[in-house]
Length: 165
Image (cartoon, rainbow, N blue to C red; front, side, top):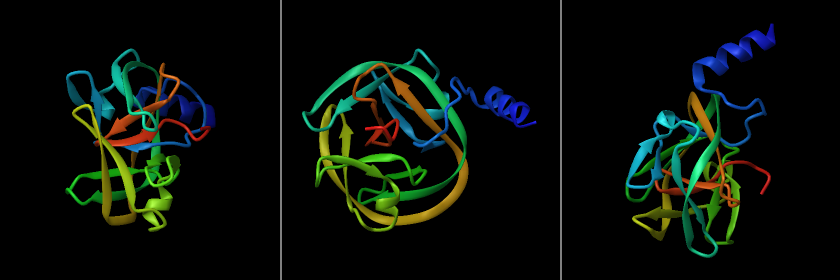
């Protein structure tokens, strides 16, 4: 029974691997790709995106090797510039204050307040202006990429694709 449900969800959501979702960026997020930003739900395996190494400032074009999606509770962060990003509380996000990735739930709860943005090839510090710990239940996506950094940029924010950092 569960296998049929899983298979139905996989067919509906372009699921390409069957591991549990720990990291998840919500539908509607714009992901940095070479040349333009694309909605996360429109990406497919083989598409190129930008991966970044936030500690060194390096960034490269890399290829998506797997996409996983599911329905999860999401919170939302609104940045000082008005940008919003919805994600599951387990989504690893880079905190420039300690140069490490932490679960988005720490931003939702107010434990953390700064983020690292990457736009037009440049890193910028950003602060959280508003937190909504529970925003919606929505489709979320996890992207696995060829880059050893396993990062990507969602709505301008540097995120990691998994919790094993």
